[in-house]
Length: 275
Length: 138
Ligand SMILES: [Cu+2]
Image (cartoon, rainbow over all chains, first blue to last red; front, top):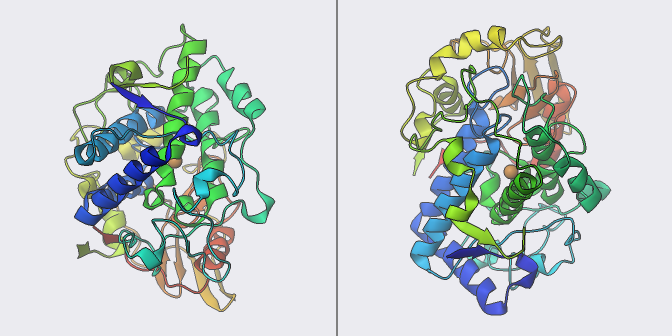
């Protein structure tokens, strides 16, 4: 059974295996197909049109399936690998071991944002950014630029306290748990972390930075935590809603999975915490 | 690896075919998009209801940024991104208007700003002199 662990608790061997699996998916080209899919949804998900991956109720089940696909790809390389999660309420500075050279490498240099240490630095020649929207083909970061702060535990708890999963008009202006977690409204959790990391993470091709997976694994865990606190609160909307994915509608691009199928993560993995 | 133009990518992404880039697509859903805005009853200031922001054309940090109605009329069969396009040194910057009237671009996707000009300037700062390129796909 897959157990997803807090990245801060990984052993040196677990970190090395995770990194090696990432590099192998990158080498074969499979990694970049995930970046392409994510960007295609980023560009087509709109507040007044069809929306599946972002700014809509299915933000959480869509990314859960997206992460499951990616985790299975990693496990096809190394069966022991699972997706770690990054609790950014606890590991909240650029000095965290997350950004050390034996794991994801650190922030970018001032001149061009280029990450210069760790397994994904350009000098290692194993992490060319192929799916890109500008001319730069190297991984970039700007951790905490401009004095930005990561969300606090108190801010997370304020969002987890929300009773209702989502509300009309089911987009970036909605009230409710999903949109406050996604970050278009209120204290802003998910979006703010993308911006805090900077570089590719702030763009539509954000999965180019491997921290994307650790960030979204934590967002996914927060959804599970919210479900545990609100067992009587269902996924919404239930049915008949234009442009968005109702409980039993299928989600692109897979077309074989619905939000209802994604509600129970324990069928696929558990977390290293008692939830 | 194949290269397609940003305009092609945008057209594919917002067209009735849906996510041609991402593999198999659902046939249902996309066709309702043009009327969806009316049925979801947007509030004042939403993407469907708000007026287009002013056009602009300036040099910012050495880059020519322009915004306004796209030449060619933007015949995508919908109004997903509004009839408004932004370019940096002549290359299209994919922008999107949020329901509350704020804007994002593919460069600063997770940080809404008040106007498309602010989004263009933020992209120029982020690019640090690098050119926008047509979307390159793996
Ligand atoms: Cu994200």
